[in-house]
Every structure is written in structure tokens, then in C-alpha cells.
Amino acid sequence: MTVAPGASTPPRDELTTLLRQAQAGDRSVLPALKTHMDAHPEYWVQQGNLSREIRDLLITQLSVGDLARQEAITRWCAAQEQALAGPTPSPLEVLLVRDILTCWLDLDRWRLASVALDKAPTRGDQQAVQMRLDAAHHRSHVQAGLPPQSKALAISEVAVFTDADVQTEVFSSWTPVHQKGERLWGA
Image (cartoon, rainbow, N blue to C red):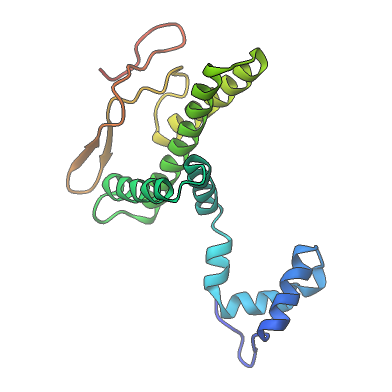
């Protein structure tokens, strides 16, 4: 979007006031706020990217305050994103790969919670974590285009097709199993 001719953006103090009023639900500030966002698209691009915010929150939770681990997880995600998306991904491929990685982080978070509960579990905690783990498995399967009815997330290989070639990333050596015990794919 572009700024309307003759429109000006509010000074920083006024912008801070506008943001506070908007956060409180004051609809009267919307015209001025829209003018600011038209003039500064970087604001809404950053603030509107909830997928990035979710991924950053998951990385923060997984790192448990360890900044070295947080940086390592962040770099791992960036490397996986490049490896899976390929050298010249389309915007859709970028979004899909980022969503797959976010689902993968969420799955890892619930796997870690499950392992922690194995040390001192209560029955209610185990059931709650298992339900969340199953839901994370389902989301990661849907994002990766895999059969959602598969009970165990057990991707032995995920192929990413690009215009020029096929790239393969190995994530796990587990074998996927259908709920009734029948193999669906993989080795």
C-alpha cells in the first residue's frame, strides 16, 4: 500500500499513544493507525506475521532460557528451511516449509514434555500430553502432505520436489504405522 498524497505519519509520541489506544480496543484511532501502516509497511509485515511469532515462541520454550541452545535451534531451523525449500523456492513453498518446521518444533516440544512426564507422571498429565502429542503428529502430517490417519510420526524420508530435481531430507528412522497396525509408506 502507498500513502495517500498529502498524508503524513504521526510523530513517535503520537504513534505510541495510538498503539496503546488500539491495544485497548479504541476504534477511533484506526484511521490514523492505518495511515501510519501505509507509510511504514515494515510494521505490519513484522507485527502481522503470527507464524514467525509462534515459531520464535516455540524456540524460546524449547531452549528453556539457554541462549546458546536458542541460537542453535534458530540456526537449525534456518538450515532446514534452506535445505527443504531449495535454492529458488516459490512464495508458497517458503510458507509451507516454514509451517512444516513450526509443526516439527511443536511436535518436539510435546515429545520433550512426554519424556519429562515419564520421570514423574500422573495419569491425567500423561493423557493430556498424549492428546497434544497426537494432535501435533496430525498437524505435521497434514502440513507435509502425509496421511493424517497414521498414528506414529515416523517419516523416514520427505521428498521436496523442485523444478529441476528432487531433494531428500532424512528426519527419522521410525516406521509409520496405521492405527490398525498396517504399514502405509516408508521403510
